[in-house]
Length: 471
Image (cartoon, rainbow, N blue to C red; front, side, top):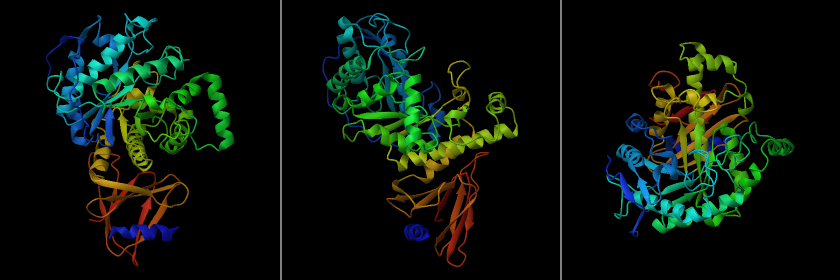
């Protein structure tokens, strides 16, 4: 094993035009947009783009773009709020994805609020398609009917989100899987009518806790059975919609659980895509550990209640300091693992703490990243990985993660950590290297030089990821 590591590591040598009619009138030439880049942050919050611009994120998501909000009356569109968000975040250098919601008081057969999507009543389905086409036309950057101040095209549109959550008391989708398929087909055709180069993203998939702790085949079968009992129809909904490969270009996995689940989730969804090699994005990549025991792979040093009491009150305690340090570790591990598993992009959550009672999960209330160690840790990682062209996970002992990044210009770099207690990472190299732990407190890193002993570099690994590179 060490020979394999040795061999590879030798490579070290804004806003106007508020009201308009719904007519699009035609479409010009749009896109394709430049790559969105991998590192994303979300969700969009007004007046916060400048806060996240210095980190190095390149894209973001606007959730809940509601048909009923933009078209309160048939044929009359109000673009004000959406234009404002797009202009603000684009001016700060961000590309944008939008999550479209079909809810509309005058078109939904059983309207239950702006977050609950459903197939419009039959007489209003053309209106829905016209709205989608008008929206894409407004933001596609083709020079025809574009939003004032648009700086670059918006070419990624997700159709609903977690639509499989049909059994919940407040679902994100009211209707059957077949009805979602009809909506997806309507939206797909409308998006492509405005801009062939725009990407249609399947409703965000939340596979819940099936792969936490890397279950064996029998344990996974048991979990699936339990999940189907608790949420009848949800997995069938996911499998069915994944098969609608002619009506979407990409999928979005909700990466809210432990980073170690990601390879298994990707493998699971691909088996239902009929061999299609669709792009995979990750959203809802929560930057903290979950405060529900069954949603994490390892025990925490404090109880959930202790963590919540101290962190939610922003107490300056050992518990709060541990939690903020762990937020840095969790975020960096998720980002690195996502690159290694071939994700097109990852949207790290959240831009701010959510107001109390806005979400059912306590984590949303305390996972804001601004002016916390995670903000600086992610900036540190993005800067060090600038210009990477590939990554390989090296052979290493169980619980040890060693990733070798290559670059178009310059020597490779290693990102490594251990989930199995302190470990010594050793490789043959005749020159000093820099070792830089991810920032877990304060705002700056504390790099140090490691010189070879007997022609070998030795680095101590623990749960905090370390960057190893040539000075």
